[in-house]
Image 1 (cartoon, rainbow, N blue to C red):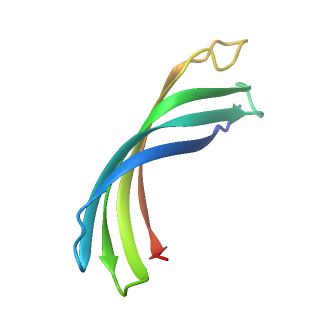
Image 2 (image 1 turned 90 degrees about the vertical axis):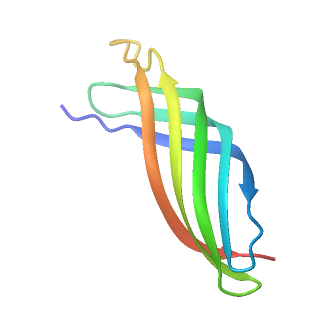
Length: 105
């Protein structure tokens, strides 16, 4: 039987950015709360655990207010006894590539 796992992350990061006029590379790191939830399939449970968030990216300034960015983001959290019946434990380790538009006000 298939089980789906939903993960929601709320994190706070410290970011260091090079203040270039056109290109702004940046790096950051922080901690977060990772909410794991599964309510279908074999494994069922909910758990909030602390985790790590690390990121690096590049912002391209198009104007004084608008920019484009691309970044890589790594998340790490450890899960223990997620499902009381089976005692599921593991490590959540994932890399995201994110891009978007930024507005400065």
